[in-house]
Length: 366
Figure 1: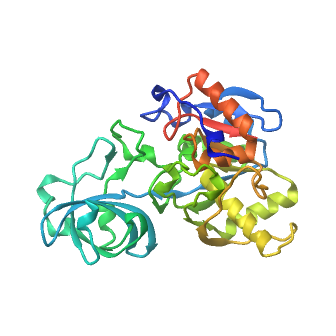
Figure 2: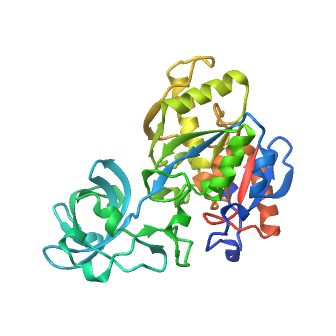
Figure 3: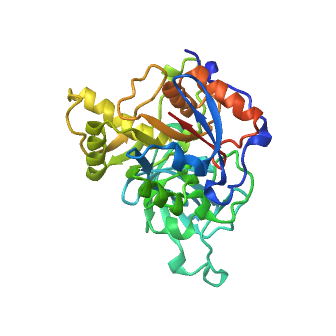
């Protein structure tokens, strides 16, 4: 297995720059992983494509406005911070620019920033722009590998008030409505990027799915920006996979256990839900738990790298967007559906002018 095995050429004009309205107007490529057969639908058809009794697992993580701007207190020099992951209340991992000026002990006075080309932040009236209540500070606690800083935010609420929502590096259009980079059910702050498969769901569609007898269950996995990082090693097994905080609550564990007893399929919405469920499944195996034992609530740092050859334990199907070449995510979907099936389906999607990546169209793999 080589990283180049997961490469493909995507015409840049197929990278979606803006979301469609309504959310479920996107196209849906349906892939039968047993045969490799492909059909073309609309996302709203998911209501007919999922069987009654299925369990739909969604990631309720919400994107934080993780890009912060300010000035060093000692020199007044301009600084930009990009929050990567919350370690504990008020303490985050972050990248900083310019990096050389952000040493241990540096303090940055955070201030409102104008909306940028690639993101949008909550509006702050100009009359209050320099009010003390509208300012926070970030102190650099330490500097680690790769220039990653540990910073303490005082107060942490300054992120919500002053931050700008970061969009993926391949999106160059301005996002006028920040809620379009959030799922309609997100309520757990902590992601630096959206779990994009969930962006296609509307409240009405979710209600219709429940009315049909499809159960919804929720997990949390806070997405880090490493999700966009390509694998550079020739052998993907040498790639150091990033970790992300996850939580599978008790109520979801009960739903999943009952579905397994009844023989009902579990459909994960997005690779983040897949990673959460399969992390739990792997940890069950490592603990020596029997297949028949109940699934238990769990939380921690997901460190599972899903590659072809992975034995899927809890996931029977998935809804996902189209992923970047040579990425850990295209490797994950290849592990589930087969590398040849995935690359053939991607080529079909390219020929049919599907929209790719975060604001793009979706796949149902079953």
